Length: 170
Image (cartoon, rainbow, N blue to C red; front, side, top):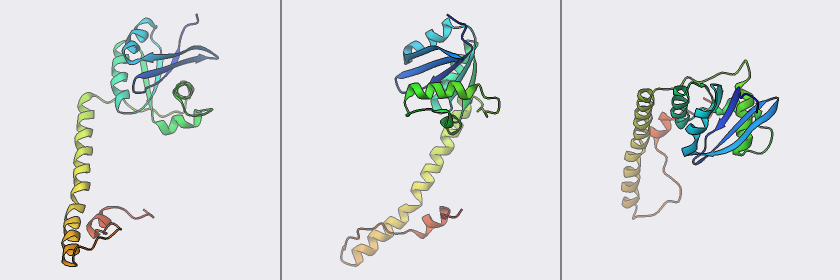
């Protein structure tokens, strides 16, 4: 078996797809979540490419602890390398090809503290977005009740919600 130098790892819910290509395909394998670390422990340190998502930062930290070089790439930068229909095997192959490109932009691996801070900011933003239309809904219900409870099929427009969201030209 040839020495493995570059691996594309496609992360899914329960089955991960591993692809290695150095001219010819050396490894093309499906791994269950519980076997991923055991598989990478057996390999010599190599470059591992992963699409950046919330869980990829966890796997990046785990693989770096095993001595591998992990490179995270935004999914939009990997998509042009998919040659055929979108499935896990094709994605792993595209990731493997994209990680070898010299002009590829990579994402830094976030620490657990950075991820928790981002989660708090996103949750706060979600609460604020949900809070803005609430007074508009209450006002609409009051006005509908004053008209005799007539139901309106369309959603009421809220000027406060419209002012917060940018228009289509922005």
